[in-house]
Image (cartoon, rainbow, N blue to C red):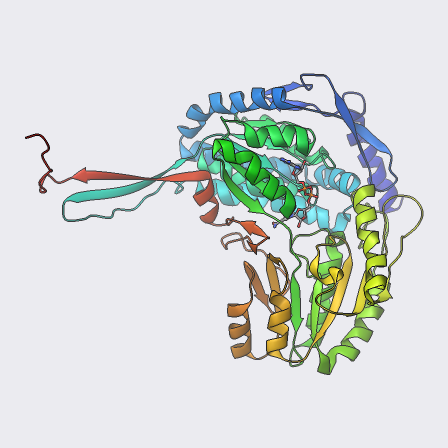
Length: 503
Ligand code: NAD
């Protein structure tokens, strides 16, 4: 049996569990349908077939979940850090045990290739272990004495938080937000993307089985404009951690304003990979291809703009075209596949509309630029050349396997083009001149920069964007800055004179 056939077999037996029951919500430790009983269907981008029904929740479901999270908060906040650490480790262990099941579901629900999703599931386990271990020191404070006061600081969890996640690598991204929130002592209401609810369900199931007390982790499915909006507006929810599009972030900020929500946003990007002529061009080529065509290009940190120095551009372009044409598009559960289908029809139409945009703007479609097959939302990996930085294909986030190549003359020109977008998530610089690398990375407007490397995530480092790419940082201790409040307590030494009014 080919590995595709055997993976499809395994998937069928996993999905059998949900075919009749559908995906419910998890509120206060209980599995429940939406209050109205309404559902929607989730479909696979591979063949457009319906996977199962999903609870379509509204403000009443969110209210029940927020109340459960509020009720569970004091006990979870006061649970010893070592106990929270132990539970987070149990969740990590269960993710490892069920990694294959998670990866198969993720691929079928999102169209991502198995070769990447197997690793993404395990990265989810790493997130729980990493933040679980940090639970022990999350509340440590400082001693900041002054002549008359012994000042101390401590950190306390902010309260119940809302976590809203997108459909791209949804399992890993959910763990990336939920693990630090739980480690800090917050309780959560998670609203996963309507297009990829399967693995959020598995994750909540795992957490429940790991012995998490009822109400600590609540899962509410539904549409963004219904359940998502209600979550951002709920007065018991103290903060919203959101990953998604920049324009949704802006809506959430407005929706959360009346209740003064703290927000953390991981948003879109149009990230440059800047290749100078003195770079190791073989490695630069591998990294540029990997960073845009892996994960179907549905990746916030993708290097969707290639800025290449004119002196080496022709040769680099020829090698790029050859390689892009060889990328294997296919069934996501086939282990040889490098690109699977895009998430859904509307997104497919958005991505493919840029093929016409590129033609209209006068760029060349040097590879791809077409649908792949006639079923499912597959596109051929695409390369636009002869592009300038002011074109829509260079400014807007396409969020698919589509690379726009732009030439530059010198460092000054490269920097001006690199910074000339509304976004500022990541940047990738390829040069063997270390002084230039330092100068350029200092001036590049991005939250994360890699020099002579693709994006290699290291959990203790800060992750986040500037400009339209985000607000706040995750990773290391930065995550706790969001999920916790700093508290100052001053103990008087009795040595200062207290002003006496009315004496
Ligand atoms: P999206 O903004 O459409 O949806 C994200 C989530 O927000 C979904 O759960 C959706 O239901 C919800 N939502 C939509 N409208 C809402 C509203 N009015 N109120 C509350 N919630 C609402 O994003 P998407 O299309 O699912 O994801 C792709 C986007 O995410 C891309 O722009 C990508 O760059 C970005 N992203 C960023 C990062 C990062 O780390 N910066 C990581 C992954 C994805």
